[in-house]
Amino acid sequence: MKKFLIFALVAALMFTAFACGTPPAESSQSASQENGGVGASAEIATTQPSASVAAGPLSPTTGLPGNGEYRPVQVQIDNESTGRPQYGIQAADIVYEAMIEGADTRFAAIFNDNLPEKVGPVRSARVYYQMIQNEWDSIFIHDGGPYVAGFDESYIYSDENGGDMKVRIDGTRRAEDDVFWHQSVGIAYANVQAAEDKYNYERTERGPLFTFDANADLTAYPDVEKVNIPFISTLDHVEYRYDSAADQFVRYFYGDPFLDAETNEAVTVQNIIVQYVTDTMLSSAEKGRIKIDIVGSGDAEFFVGGKHMTGTWEKDSRHAGTVYKLDNGSNLVLKPGNTWVELQPDTKNIVTTYAGGTTYPKNGKSS
Image 1: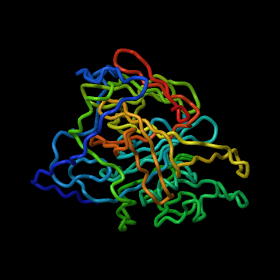
Image 2: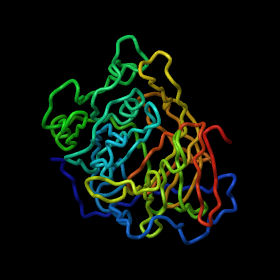
Image 3: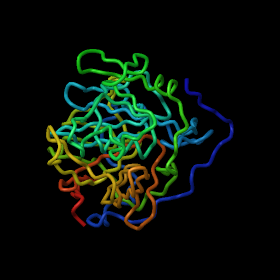
Image 4: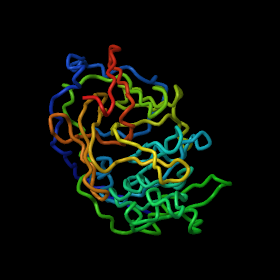
């Protein structure tokens, strides 16, 4: 089992603080308000640990104390109607959400601090999810993916499409009942702890991909009530409501709390990154496969501590870490806790609602 080293020494969190600057349309918003915004009701339980005290080594994936090891495991998780609610998604340190074919999204969940024994349902890979794996050098768990000969752009097992990973656990290509099992036809789960125990290897950390500071000064930024992320659907497709009492966002899906099957509670999120990406239909791919460009650069929006910031993202190569910067050029600093990265198509507006009710629509094509 993965061992966590607990030390008595109190470690200071990083000194980096957010620099000032507000979204252009809202520079006069309530940056000095003490109320962090209204959001989900107090009855919705939150499960993330407090980030107010730093004791022991700090996690490279959450900034929380207790686990300084770098041992990421990435699992592809279903988000179609038959896959909800999912097991283990609240325990993930980082979750990437991106479009697949049609109007559905899928999750790439990265576990490092906690390794659940049941995660899923596990679904298939895509090339752009493998480039996320390349970024974190994680164990990669999935259940198949595009492999039809002649469709090179969507073929997941080629090195140039991110297939040159050290450990791939593919439910369609190897029998590993201790790590991966099919509960019924089309429904599979993974034991993340067993995967780490079995394939433990020295990962390559791509520098500090995220920077955390529990005491970052965010007073210059406007207070958020909620943020609506449509992907290619309607604005209530994904909604995060800020709970000021817990200092976390509560995730909703078409107006209902988005539950974790293990906890039976609404999923809560400390940090949200909206990364605007270009997605295109692949003319040379079967089944209407799409391409999402996550190597390159573009606009981004950040929601941290109930505040809203705008900036950019840049990823130089598939093995490089993604660098997130604010509009003033300073690096993004997150609060300790979990982070969700929403890979939003750059032609569709997300809408941020500030405390007080004013809205700020933006997409990746707007200035």
